[in-house]
Image 1 (cartoon, rainbow, N blue to C red):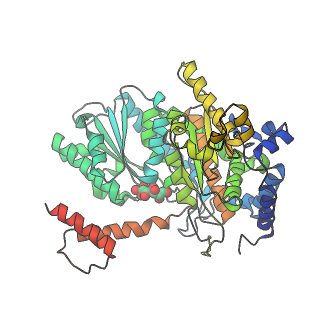
Image 2 (tube, rainbow, N blue to C red):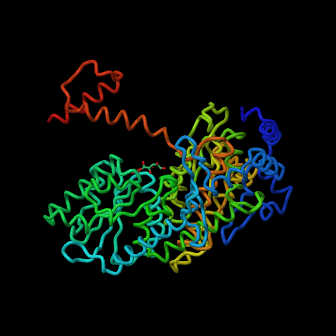
Image 3 (cartoon, helix red, strand yellow):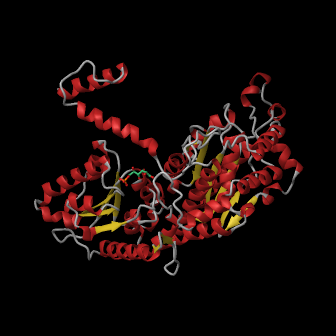
Length: 540
Ligand code: G6Q
């Protein structure tokens, strides 16, 4: 059924028209309690959505829409292991990865929670061994560097979390990430490393991903060139995968393999064995805290009423902007350098999950789905692209993410950082009217250039501190936001068929580099000429 023609969708559209000329300035001046009234909190995480282009009525209508689209049923279906990933006939159970030991989650009648904890125990033993030096390399040296080789969901989460939690890492340990098939990536990652003290974690759910296997083979050759004995591989390579056969075929002992399951999507896999490098970095106890934080947000999402449910509110605001306010993009602006990789992580989570144009039953969709997600940490972004946010022609909903208490003691730094976060959200919302500009003594000719329209929406998310626990909460908050939106739009948020075509064409073109030149190779004239140019250089 057409979503756009549903009565509530129409009602929301009419409601938006009635709000078209309303400015956040008016909304705040008419309701002095708007700030606190539109702030919700769960377990220390604060979500202030007051600076969004909404009224109480908007939120009511959006929550009516959530009810109308049976969001509660969707949430229940996900948590109870129904195969909601319909195109791949799979359950979607990243939430089971953080379920406590005494819980039970059934997939086809089988309780997966004991399996999850068996792998967590195996990871703990291994991580402790590497950290304490009882796991040694082939020549008896302790491990000093862990190189995670993976891409997409097998890279972005661990890389983001390791960067965020670096303060928890022991000084003597280094964690590096290699993802790109571009040889410069692995070349740089290996530079300066001692093979005898290096451990590779090859992270690939399928263990067939070309980039990862190419990098893993290069790493193996590098190791063997130095250590000269193929039995060294067993002490320097472990695998995280759901494909035992391919792991064994690569030459990694299945005893050094950490499994996960087809009901864990790549971009949702950080809390699974894919987080092994994070666990080695921060230690098993801290990793457990990350899982506990995510679980706290899971329970909140599952049980809290929608009007106080952080992921639901965040998700429905996104539905509002894409469906009714014509916004194209969504900015993620962490005011914390430790969260520098968060925008890239959320970009995949959101765009790969909901960048779809058919509904779950294959019907073309008649509304806008996922926005383009982008962002950079503040305050850096202020000196780069914030000009467009303040005076450009687009409405860009922004998420400002701040951490109240830093781990360093440099009060001046943190005060300046937080002042900028609050100031930017305020400036975007309220702007500066021409009258205010004139009153500030600006010459007439400059007034248009120095006026700020304001009315740029933002949400502020505050964490008390950045810890494994709060990072787990933040990850789950966004996972469930994305779920909420996907469910409302009616798309399957858990497949990614859109990445297949490019892969297939790359395989074909790769095979053509060594062929004799053909004039009609079946490519368009642009692609043909580009390939020819590369072949000429390659020949030399
Ligand atoms: C994520 C996607 C994708 C995947 C990578 C790596 O949801 O499925 O980003 O994680 O393509 O896949 P492998 O882990 O199988 O190597």
